Structure formats: structure tokens, C-alpha cells
Image (cartoon, rainbow, N blue to C red; front, side):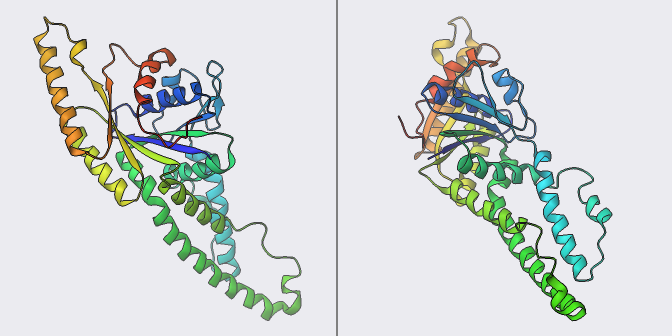
Length: 324
């Protein structure tokens, strides 16, 4: 059973670093692991120091680890085919809608919400059709992430309405064909292929099932020891619980620990003390969640060598991924 770990939170708190480090540890433990970036502003390739694209790529230096940066444009053709099928049905019922008008819907690239739709589409594809034991998601900043989890319910209503409208339009068109052509009306066959709307709606239902399954999915909120970031994390946890997304861990990144402070740096001691207070505040605010603190790095976290110490810390967090 493929398990999923999502990292999310405020922009710039280190979600990509956490996702990459977790993927590194899971692969080292013998699990076939895929790290997925759903953030439109990708930085996963930089963290792993490997060129990435819209198709999963294996890391030669790390057996059993692959990574991918989702590009919503690569899914736009699927959504465009659905729009063209709808346009064909409308035309069959006498509603004038030219190819040029359909084309204009996609003239500016992927439609609004395509980032989240592509992420959910590929979530189902990777979990149900892939060969990975674990998938780690580096999500976009909070607003995008909440849309990601709200999308299945929103899309279900929209697709149900569209599907109903499509059925009515097709019945009108079929009636017109029978009146004009009689028994020969459908001699050339019916649909050109599977109904894209039905397929898409089914994938949205499946995505919601996966996201809400506590036995295979966990969302980890990443924050830093600063008041604004903590407050945003509280709102995010509340929204995730409302959406029935399993949350078990708060990761507090960039914590200046007392043992890392030089005795002659009063400013550093003051900052370490403040971070300690913020950690206590986080533990009080989230009494039912595990709190994992990651130390402030001396330099930039970039590349596999710098990810390994973080991977050790993150391995202490509860995980839906079953142990070997």
C-alpha cells in the first residue's frame, strides 16, 4: 500500500527541504520513494541538486529515490479534450460554439486552478498506478494548499452539474438526429472514447479518499519559531481538520538551539531563549500533535549532504509509512 506524506505551511519556512530530507531517509530505509513538488515556484531540483521535469526521475546517487516537479501545462491537454467534447455536444444540440471559441479558453495556458487539479490528478496516478512504497509531497504555500484540499468537493459539484447538463444536451441532440435520420441516426457509432468528465470526477473522488485515509496519509505542517508563522500554522491545522485531512506532526524549522550558541554572543543567547519560548508555545497550541524541531543550519541547506542531518531529525516524527 502506497503511503503519502504532505509537507505544507507558510511560504519560505522550509517545506521543500523537509520533503527532500524525508524522501532521502525513506529511500535509505529501503522504500521505493517519490518526492513530488506541487509548488508552481519549484525548488526541489535545487534541494536535490538534480535537473527535474514533469516526469519522475531517479537519482543515480540515491537508490530507490525519484523526484518530479509537476507542471500543470502537461495536464492541460487532458482538460482541453474534455472541453472539446462538451463543445461537440453543444453543437449537436444546435448551440453554436466554434473550435476557435474553445481554443480561446486555453489561449493563456492552463486554466485557473490547474496547479491543484494537476496535483490531485497525479496523486491518484502515482498512488494507484505507480511502483512506489511512499510518496512525499512538497506543497505550495498555505493558500494553494488549502485550495488543493478543497478542490475535490468543489470539482465534484461542478462536474456533477456539467455532467447533467451534458446529458440533457446530448438527449436533445439525439432526439433531433432521430427526427431527421430515423434508424440511420446512430449508424456511425456513439462516443469517440471514454467520457472524460466521468473519469475526472472518479479521480477527484479517489483523491479525496486518499487524502482522508489516516492509515496511508499524513500532513505535516512546517513552521518557524516566529509569531506570524505560528498563527498561520494554527489556521492551517484548523482548516485541515475541517477537511478531515490527518495531521499528526508540526515541524519547527530553523530553531537556534542553546548548545549552538557561543557564550560571548549575548544577542545569540537572547534569540535562542526566544526560540525556546516559541517551541513551548507551539507545544501548548498543539497538544495532540508531535513537535519536531530542526536546528538552524550554519549555511545554506543545499544538496544531499546537508539534507542528511535533517533527515535524521524528521525520522523521529510519526509516519503512516509502515516499517519494514
